[in-house]
Image (cartoon, rainbow, N blue to C red):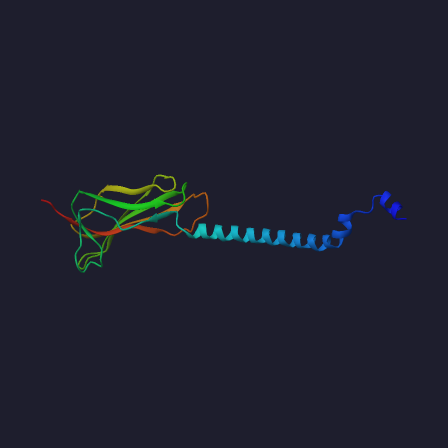
Length: 186
């Protein structure tokens, strides 16, 4: 009888020893695989959320220029003296965290000194697309816009990104902010 059982090939040592263990091991394997897939999906969702929350462009510090004067009572903002028709020149330390985004830079000159009407001049431009990590220190030079009169103006350069390969939080960030004292050189 034992020989008949062996001859038919239904008996194996592995099956006899590990047969009772297969169902619980298979169930444990399915559960572990399912948990791994859920954890990987959750980690990918968290990473996508974190990527969308961090800015594509990071400003590493305030603008730098040898022409800056630091005066008391100006809310800690540096002041740059420029004649009418002159140029603003400064260096901005910044870098790109996510390449392929189109940068939209809005430069605003606002005057609201006591005794004068509030007046704002602004211009918007689309910046170059840089790879990740660039440009580091970027030298920025621009002419004063037409219509600026002598007085104290607040310069503010803010930027936003659009058309990014990964979604980004649509929130403009301030690149540079300082005071510009425009004077008549005549």
